[in-house]
Image (tube, rainbow, N blue to C red):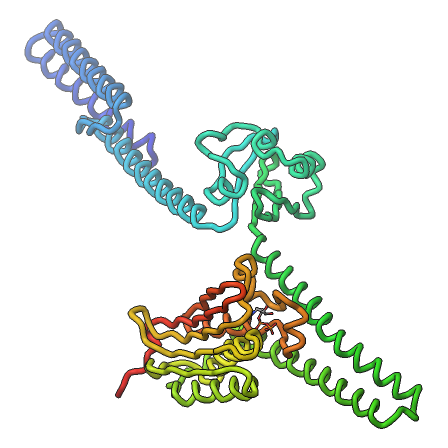
Amino acid sequence: MNRGTLFWTPAVLRILVLFSIAGAIGFFFGERAALLAAIAALIASLVMQLRYLEHLSLWLDAPEQRLPDGWGAWSEIFARLYRLRREDEKIRAELAEWLARFREAMAQLPDGVAIIDDVLFLEWCNPAAEKHLGLDLARDQGMRITNLVRHPHFIDYLMLARFEKPLELEINERRYQMHLIPFQSKRRILVTHDVTQVELIDRMRRDFIANASHELRTPLTVINGFLELAVHDPDMPEDARRRHLSLMLEQGRRMQDLIEDMLSLTKLETLEFPLQVGTVNMVALLEDVRDNAVALSAGHHEVKLIASGPDIRGSTDELRSAFLNLATNAVRYTPEGGTVTLEWKNTDTGPEFSVTDTGIGIAPEHVPRLTERFYRVDKSRSRETRGTGLGLAIVKHVMMRHGGVLDIKSTPGRGSVFTARFPRLVVASSD
Ligand code: ADP
């Protein structure tokens, strides 16, 4: 049965019943009584319909209230309205939940997303876009984006509409890449991506290549110079030839040191090269470091070792390389007659290795940059003493891989203290 039949059948039946009752009254009490009864029944029915219409009108004003049960066709209408409302509430709740999830996802997004309309008014943006573009959604919604971000390149980018290429902008000393994506014919999505770190790494890589090439070119130029001399002057006196050969050997060694340090540094920075953790026999390692420092000093300094700290868990090879760098630096940057003290001890915060020298020291402005690759305070002194400029960068990475830090304290003309501090958890258990 269709809806029309379902509606009309009971209604017609109800009218037929009414007429039958009126007919029965007419049969027993006469025509007048039948007419009066029919009129009274019609009026009662009309009043009832009007009451239900009133209920419906009141309910539409406040749909959160319950609907009355109703009678006849009204009961079906009220039941359907009630079902519609329940479904509507469910859809609303689902939509609200979906919107909350979408907002949450957008808030977590590291990239900025802003929606602007065809006349460049800001409709919405996420917290990352607020941060990148210096916006405040509550304050700036509905404002023209070109009035909010007043960078001329940004305005050109929007006006010229060449969106196939991203725009790079510097805002508040950070670099952002921006894309404008048209959507829904009248709106545009502006996506901002912070590339400061990527650029920094890229610049460091470029600088590293430039510095490394420069460092390698210098000894190579010296070697080539001597080789050319040898080619053009085959009758060179024996002592000059020997001197040239020993200078070439020295430059060759310098290149080798450089390449070895560069390879170590690259390995230490590679995530695929995990730390080879084992128990480090600290006394053996420290004595080895001390012996190397003594050999380098060749009797020109007093080298002391004080070792009271525990054995630790870590990479023996990496720690040897880091401690050797610190100890040999102390010898290299301390004039003859000075003292170099190597000390390994435990502290409340964890074990630490310190190298104290009575050497030339470092001016405070250089200290924060010492662990940068190829950073040297005095280039000629570093080269004279076979320095690669990479030693402290290696120490820094080794310490990072062991969860530790390198601390540098220095007074020009008096000496320096380089301290490698480890966290407590590196201490090897005694069993
Ligand atoms: P280098 O191979 O040039 O010694 P490092 O990375 O080991 O390179 O050290 C960087 C710079 O830090 C050195 O060039 C030097 O100027 C300074 N430096 C390192 N250790 C000391 C020290 N113990 N005393 C004074 N200056 C130091």
